Image (cartoon, rainbow, N blue to C red; front, side):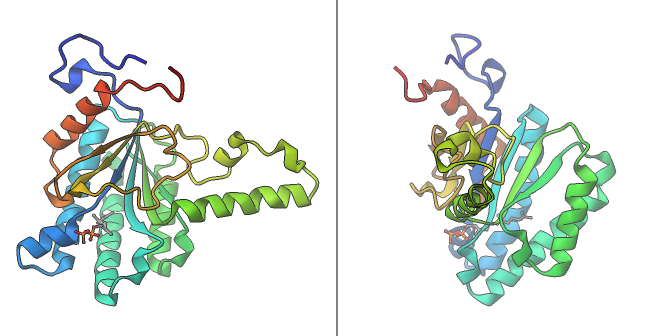
Length: 246
Ligand code: FPP
C-alpha cells in the first residue's frame, strides 16, 4: 500500500497518516537519573509530555491513539513510585474532566481498571461517560494493561460461549478474539512508537500489533518532541506494508 501522496516527502502534509498509533512511554526513570532527580520527577515530566503529544496527535488528525501508561507488571515497582504514578493519573483525570467542555477527545481505558483505587476508578468512569459522544480522536489509555492478560480474558469469554452452547470450538476464529479484547471495534495499530531505544514489545498490544510497523527512537519519553513524532510518522510512511503478501 503506497503511503505517499507525493514523491518528495519532507513533511507530514505529504503523507497518509496512520489511523491508529500506539506509544510506549518509556525512559522516564533514565531521564530523571541523568539529572540526579528521583524517578517520580521523570514520571512527572513524562506526564507533561503525554499532555503535549496527545494534543498534537489530535490536532494533526490521528484517529486512534493508544498510550501505554501502566502495565500489569508495573505494580512491582517500589511503593513510592507507584503512588507517584497514581497521583499523576488522578491529576490528569481531574484536569481532563475540568477542561472537558472544550475538548473533542474521546477517552477510553484498556486494561483491568478494577485494580485501581476507588477514587481513580470513579474518575475513569466519569471521563469515559462524559466523552463518549464526541467525534474527535479516540485516546486509549492503557492502565493495568497487559497483552497476555488481555488474550487470557478473551479466551475466558469465548470459552463461556462454548460452554453455553452458543458456538462450537471449531467456530472460534481470529475475528472472535479481536471482538473480545479491550480494543474491540477499533482498527489495529498501524504504527507503534517506542522511545528510549529499547527493542521490546513489553506486553503492549500483542494481538493487535501482528502487522504494526515499529519505530524505535533513541529519545527518552520526557524529551520526545512533536518533531520526533513527525519523524516517526515520516518513517512509517516510507515502509512498504505487505501484511504477509508480496
Ligand atoms: C516507563 O518508563 C514508564 C512508565 C512505567 C510510566 C509511564 C507513565 C507516564 C509517562 C505518566 C503518564 C501520565 C498520565 C497522566 C497518563 P520507566 O520509568 O520504566 O523508564 P526507565 O526504563 O528509564 O526506568
